[in-house]
Image 1 (cartoon, rainbow, N blue to C red):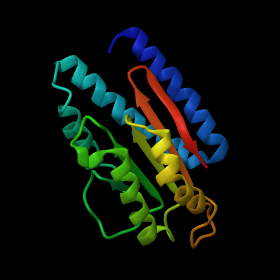
Image 2 (image 1 turned 120 degrees about the vertical axis):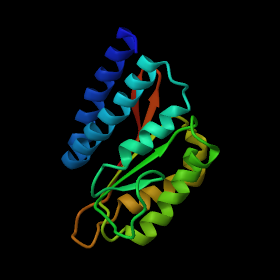
Image 3 (image 1 turned 90 degrees about the vertical axis):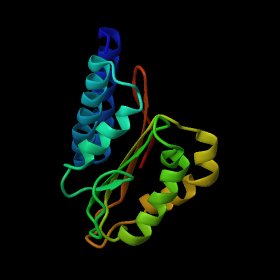
Length: 172
C-alpha cells in the first residue's frame, strides 16, 4: 500500500470512528477492530502481490476468529444470536456477496436475532444509494428506531470502502 493511500485510509478511519462513537461507543470499537483486520488483509495482499480475489479468503480466515459476533456471510455459522453483527459486501467476491444480497440476508438475520442484536457494522465496496433507498432504507430505519429485549437501541452503520479510504453511507 503506498504512503498516500495509507494516510488517506487511516485519516478516514479516525474520522469515521469519531462519528460512530457519537452515536454508539461500542460500535465505534467494533469498527476499529474489524477495520484493522481488513486493512491488514490489504497490506498482506499488496505486499505479497496476491491476486485481488485472495482478499476474500483472507477476510474469511479473519472472521473465523472474531468471537461472539454474528458475521454475514463469513465466519462459522452459529445458531446463537449476539449483540454484534458484521456484514461484508464486496464485489471482489462472488456475486453472492453483493450489497443487495447482503442487505437481504441482514433483514432475515434481524427477524431471527433482532431481540438480541444491538449493533451492526456493514462494510461494502459496492454502494448504490438509489437501490438502498428504494429497497432497504425503510427496513433499516424501522429496525434502528426500535430497541432489543434489553432495552438497547439498534444501531446500524454502513461504511463504503474505496481505494483511498472509508466513508459513512448510513448511521442510525
